[in-house]
Image (cartoon, rainbow, N blue to C red):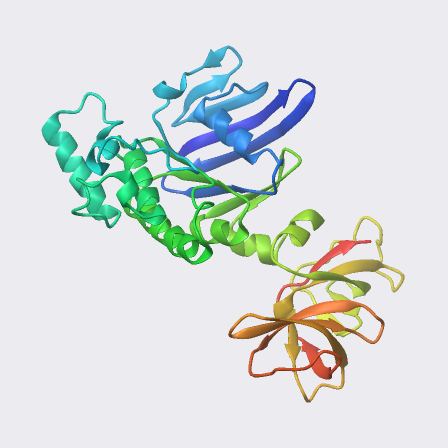
Length: 353
C-alpha cells in the first residue's frame, strides 16, 4: 500500500509555475528524496504535502485518504505528518524531554515519559532529557528534532534540508544515523535536499527535480548508472560527454576505444539502421577511465585534485577533449605529464547529439 501518493500536482505563484504535473508515491517504510538545485520546486512540493499550501491542480493522498484535491483540503494539524526543519526549531525555554513530548497531545504523563525515554535511547541521547537545547551540539539538537517529530507516531515524516547547518563530517555521519533510525522505526519519510551524497546515503528512491518536474524517480544506483535523461546524467555525479559513433545496436566507438552496451543504445528514432553516420554523446565518469602504464593510449594531465586516497585528474586526450579519472593517490603525476589510460565501463550511457 502507498503511504503517500502525489498525482499530477501543479502549483504556481501568480503566473510563475513552480511545480508542474508532478507524480510519485512512497510505500510503507520507504524513504524517498526530492533532489535538485535551488529553485527547482522541491521545497514547495514538501510544503504542499505538509499542508502549508494548497496545490493549484492534482491530488495528494496519505494512506489512501485525500488530503488535497479538487474541493478537498485537510489542515496541516489533521494530516498526522511529522516535520524536521532545517533550523531544528526547538523550544529554548524547555528541556529536551519536554521538547520531545510537545507534540504528544492527549497522551497521559506516564505514556509520555515512556515514549520520551524510548526515543532518547533510539537517537543516542539517553540521560540528556533534563538538558536544554543550548547545552547540546548541532548534531544532538538535530537528533532531538527527529525524536520530537517521531514522538506522535506520524503517518509520514518530512525532512526539509535537515543537515545543511552541520559541518561536512557530521552531516555524513548523521545522515547514516537518521537512515538507521527511520528504518528501525519503520517510518515512511521524504527528504528534500540539494546534496547528492546526502540523498544517496539516506533514500531508497530519489526524484531528480528540474524546473518543477521530476526528470527521473529511481534508486540511487539506477540514477547514476542508468539515467533516463541527459539532464539526470549531467546532474548526478561527475562526468564528461564525449562524441561517439554507433557501430551497431549495442556498440559505440569513442576516442578511447569501443564500448559494448548491455542495453540497446538510444538511437532508434534517428538512425533506424544504426549506420556509421549515427552519432551520440557518451558519458564517461571518473571511474570509467583507468590509469594503466601499459596502455598505448596516453593523455596529458591538465589538472589534479588531491582527495586523500585518490587524485581526481583532468586529462586532455589527443583530440583536445578532456575527461576525468580517479587514480589512487600513490600515482602522483605532475601537471603536463602524459600517462597511459584505458576504458573500464560497465554501464554505457549515451544520448543522441
